[in-house]
Length: 207
Image 1 (cartoon, rainbow, N blue to C red):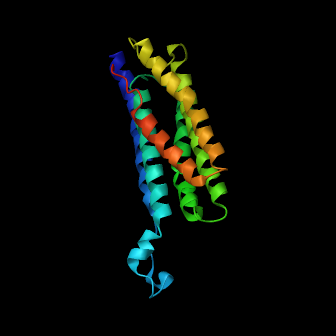
Image 2 (tube, rainbow, N blue to C red):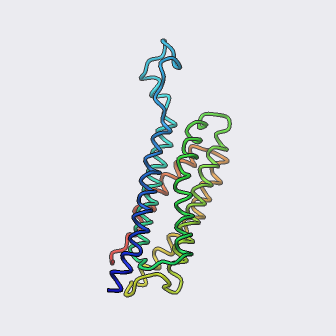
C-alpha cells in the first residue's frame, strides 16, 4: 500500500513535468519563421530563402535533442525517486523554469549565428545549459543524499552512476560556455554532442 501511495505521489510530479517538457520542445519550432515573399524579393527563390535559414535549423536540432536528453534524464531520476517533499518540489520547479526558458536562447542563437554578436548569443545559449546541468545536479543530490527520497532496494552502483553523470555535467557544459568565446559553431557542436552523450549514457538496468 505504501509503495502505491509513493508512486501516486511522484506520478503527479512526473505528469506535470512531462507536460512542461512537451510544451517547451514544441515551442522550439516557433523560432523558425516561414520566409515571406516580400522580404526575399522576386530575384531570390523560396529554395534559397529556406537554405538561408540553416542557423535556425541547427539551433532547433541542438535544442530539440538537448531537451529530449533532459526529459530522458528526468525520467531516469524518477525511476529511483519514490517520495517527495517541499524542497524537492522546488528543485524540480527550478529545473522546469530553465526548461521553459530554452526556446528563448535557442531563438537568439539562431537569429545572431551569422551576426557579429554571435559569440554573445552562443554564450547565452551555453550558460543556460550550465544552469540546467546545475539544477539537475541539485535535484538528484537532494533526492539521493542518504537515500532521502529514493525507493528501497536500489543497487548502489546505479545510484553512483547517476551521481557521477550529474557531477560531470556542469563542468562539461561549462567547457562549451568557454568555447563559445572562441567559436560559436564549435560550442553548439559540443552542446549537441553532450545532449546525445547524456541522453544515452548509462541507463540503469535495474528498476
